[in-house]
Image (cartoon, rainbow, N blue to C red; front, side, top):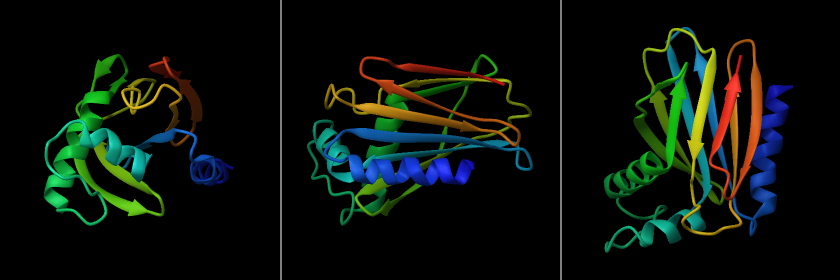
Length: 160
């Protein structure tokens, strides 16, 4: 059922453009003790906002991977904050990849022993366009929930 919801959300992202939607997924991996964070943003929108943050040329598909990684890591780090069990977490950047018309950026939150609550502060692309919608999904081995944040909503809270 959850895979169907993720597939639906991904398809929705693809079909909705030129609507402005991002998807942030948090998945708790009990074996590794980490929360895997994936962020999907339309490439064209992401490039537009990143261009306002640097004087360098921005090309997420054909540009230099190290420079793109730095831009992605900085932007998402400035616009996505996560608390687990009421403790602010540090996201460790893993990398990014292109998939269709969007970019997936991957992060990891390490040393998580249990997930009772998750608070996500998400303002991705709110500085780009006011019609932005940010979908946030949190999964554990026993629970899954999704919330929609429409500008100016910035926070989603999940309790398990």
